[in-house]
Each structure stands twice: as C-alpha cells, then as structure tokens.
Image (cartoon, rainbow, N blue to C red; front, side, top):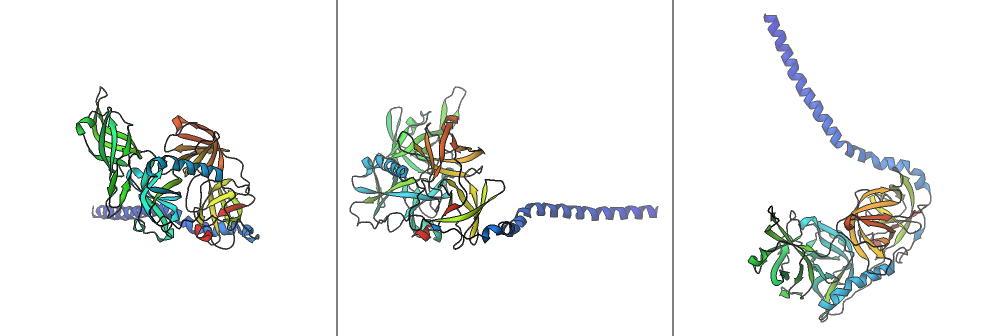
Length: 450
C-alpha cells in the first residue's frame, strides 16, 4: 500500500513538471510566431542586396532633369485645377485680400472623424507672410493658417501648414465659427466647432439659435455658410461654404426622427485636396513669393521583385532614395512610390498594390475643372485597377493623374484613363497603360531641388 502511494505521488510530481514545461513551450512558440516578422526583417536587407548584386555592378544612369521641372507633369491640367480653386473665393474674399495658390504636399495628424487635421504646403512661412489667416478651396472654407508650433517635426524645413476646421490643437482653443443655415425655410444661426474622433462627421454644432425649430429638423443636407466673424485677428467673411447640416438621432416606427446631435459634413474632403488658396491682406508688405522649387528626377536601375510587377528593387549611387518618392517609368508614366530606402537603394511599391490609398486628379475630356478625389485600391487585375473612393463623384470621362501624395510625389503625374465610375460614384476603375521599366526615374527630395 505504501509502495502504491509512493508511485502515485511520483506520477503526480511528473505531471506537475510536464505542465510547466508544456506551458513554457507554448509561450515560446507563440513568441517565436509573433517575432518571426522581425527576424525576417533582419535578413531581408542582406538577402535583397545579394540577390541584386549584379544590378548594383552596372554603371548608374546619368542624372536626368537636374534643376528643371518634371517633364512628366501635366501643367495644363494643374492650371485648370488652380483656376477652379480660385473661382469661388474671389467673389467672397477678394475685396480686401489677394490669393496665393499653394500645393498640398502632405496630410498629417488624424483628428475628428479620423480625417487629417494638418495640411503641409509647398510654401514657407516667409512666403505667406502677411496672410489674412483663412484658407479656401473654391468657395469653401478649409481652415486657417497654422502656427510653426503646431508641428514639432523639424524635418519640414520651414514649410507652412494649414490647420483644418476640425483640428483641435493641443493646449490651444479650436476654431469656432458663427454660421447660418435654413430650417424649414427659416434662417437660423449656429456655432460650429471640431467634433471628436468617434463622431460620424468632423464638425459638430454645440449651439443653435432656435433649438425648438431645430427639433423639428428630421432631414439632412441644408448648406451651412459662414457669418462675418472678427476675433483674435482672424477675419472670416460672410458666405463661405462650410458643408451640409447633418442630424444624428433616433427614428421611431413611423419614421419620425428625434434629433440628438447636429453635425456638419465638410464640403471638401481634405484627403482629396491637392491645391488650396491662402489669402493675404492687400495692406501687407509685398510677399517674397517664389515659384515652387521644381523636383529633380534621378535615373535609377530597377529589378522586378516577386510578385512580378508589384515591387521593384531600385539602386543608384549618391544620396539615398527618399521614402515616399514618386517612381516613374522611362516613358514618364507613374509606377508607384518608394516604400523602403537604404544607402543608395530602395524598394518601390506599385500604384496597383491592394490596400494602398492615393489622392488623384481626374482630368475631364470636356475641359471642365479637374475632380479631386481620394481612394484606396480594392483590387487589380491586369491593367484594370479598382479604387474605393471616400467621397462620391459624378461619372466623368478623362485621364487620371496623381494628386499630392507626399513631399516627393507631386501632383500631375500620369496614371492612366478612367475606365468607369460605378457604385453610385464611390468606385473608380482605372485603366493603366503599360509602363516601360527598362530604367526608371525617381523624384529627389525637395531639399535637393532648393
């Protein structure tokens, strides 16, 4: 009996030892699976370098386009875009101000409703000195000129920024606007301010002039315009479009809506903007405004990486390739952007990569104003690429160009043709031409062009 008890105790001890070992092995396997991508990253660089060693042995192509604007940019389309950006604002703002066209290089800091709240411009602070504070696109108010302290990132090199209307700067009061709209044919004033990240729209209405009248509002879409406002040196003119009034609430079985919150859906999607207008006071000293420094292009050797046509290994001598720089084929058609960079080499991802988001310009064949849009690649098959747009557009025919997609990916590069606009204007189908990749052009960093 004693021997039986001893054997039972020994078996119990063995089980207790096996359990921690099994648990430890399970945790070790889980950690290995989690860290496996990091281990792979450590060998990706050397493996890529060895695989492309013959490519690096070839002489680097000569510098192309040094000091000149990109020949691949559609300047005529950009001129039409500039005209459209100015057309509405002149009638509202131009009495005491003059316009300054600016390109949007980058969008930063996700804010209300997940939208970027800061726009980086192609102008420096000195170039927009004496500005009136407001920034427009056509007859829409986009935001206000920011402050250098809004961004702690020193890599911008003095580029001016725009603080969107839905931006809530840390440690400072957000922009609150007095606006007006119409409810059941009656005019009503309201206050508009930034919403929170979880709200469905980026601007909310905390105060209405007549809450009882607003309580009967069960539809959406009434336009909201600015009222004259002068505070802390910022002059907002009357009549600039903010967007459309939206109602959030509960509906009963009869379809009657009980309003709970009021919001404003912006008239312009800031993710799609490639050009904005900064207004300067007429009484200000003449601005030292220079034309935007042209981007330079460098010719580079390229080798396709698997999967075929989706990624390119790039190499050239001299300064390293900048992450986010545009890559174009020898024929000038847009291929994609640099996604990995190293000392003198990098990897570029194609425009057709699923899940990647792009800002685009749709240049109409009928000569109308280009359409700015923003979409994410849903699928790609052959030369056909489908993008899901963040805002619906009207059906148009024409060509597709890049919008502002980063500091070294300028607007106006040729992407392809519009094949179709479907799903109520939220699905854009692009037909991209064959791209000659015998060698490619890569945009240099803006600092190298200044």
